[in-house]
Amino acid sequence: MSNYKLVSLNFGQHSTHFGEVGIGVEETSERVRSDTLFSALIIAYARLFGKDAVEDLLKSFDSSPPFRVSSTFIYSENGQKRIDYLPKPLKFPRGYPVGNDLEFTKTYKKIHYLPLDIWQRWYQGSGFTVTDRTELIDYTNQANSSGNLKNSGIFDYSQAYQIHKTPKVAIDRTTRATNFYHTGFVQFNKSCGLYFLIDLVKVDKDLENRLFAALNLLGDEGLGGERSSGAGQFKPTWSDLSDTWQNLLNCPQSTDYSLISLLWENPISDTLHNDRASYGILERGGWISSPFSGRQLRRKKVRMFVEGSVFPVRTDGQLADVTPYEFQKLHKVYRSGIGFSLPIIL
Image (cartoon, rainbow, N blue to C red; front, side, top):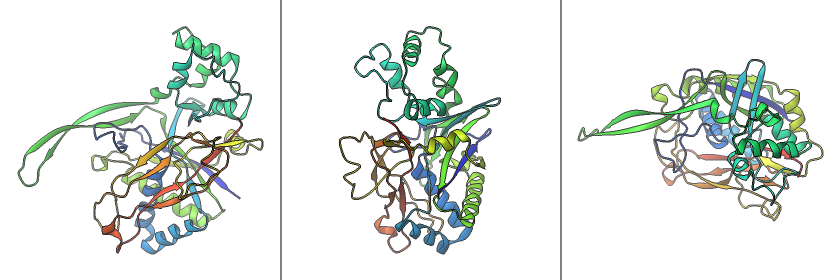
C-alpha cells in the first residue's frame, strides 16, 4: 500500500540556481528534476546516517523501490487558494479538436504546465470543451477573458517567479587573471515555491522519519548550485494529500500514464516503446558531489524520458549506474530513473 506525501519547499528570500546540461551558467531552470532531487536527498541521507546506511538503502532499489519522488513543480498561493502546477501530457486531451485548432494552437503549445484542477478535468474528467476552445481563442487574440481557464491560473505560471542575472568574477589560482561572467538566479515571488510528491511504497515510519530528516538538512544546506552564496535554502513542509490529489492518484478508469518524473530503464521494454507511447528524451549529465571522497568528477551521461511522456503502462524504472572509472574503488554513483506517473484517460 502506497503512502503518498506532498512536500512543499518555501525558499523565502533565497534565490535558486538550477542548472541543466547545455544551458550554461548564465541560465537557470525554475525547477529541479527528479534525478537531481533524488541525488540531493541521498547525499543528505548519507551525511546524517553514514555510508553503510545509504548503501543499504540504495541496494534495496534492486528488488523494488522503497520510495519514489516526482520532479519538483511550481505552486502558487493566493489567500485560501493554492495552485499546484503539473506538466502537460504529450498527448492531446479527449475532446481536443485535432486538425481544427489553427485559431489557438500557438497559445496551446506555449502552455507547458497545467493547474491541478485543469489537468484533472482534461485528462481524467470531461476533457477539453468548446468553452476551453473559445477562451484560448480569446486569449490568442488578446481579448478579455474571464473563464475557467483564466481563473484557474493557467496563464499565470511565469508570474510565480522572476529570473535575474548576477555579475561574478572568477580569479585564476595560478595567474590571478580575472574572468567576468554572469550567473542566472530564480527568485520566487511571495507565497510561491516548489513542491514534489513522494511515494513511500510500503508504510515504513522509520524510513519516512529518516527521509524527512535528510530533507531538513538539505533545506539548511541548499538545493541546486551557488550554495556558497546562500542560494537554494528552503523550509520544507511535509503534508498528507488533499482529497483532490487523492482522487487524481486513484483514477480507476485510466487508459494510460503520464510521467511526473524522469524515467530510465535498460533495456527498454516493448510496452514503453510502442505506437501508443508519446515521449520526449533528455540527456542528463553533470558533476559528482560525494560526501565520502571529496572528489569532483563528471558522471556518465544517460538519456531519460521526460516529464509529460505518456505510456500505456506504469513502470518502476531503474537506478542508472553512472560511476566513472576513477570512482570504481570508492563507491557506486547512481542517477535516479525511478518513474513516478499519474493515471490518465485518453
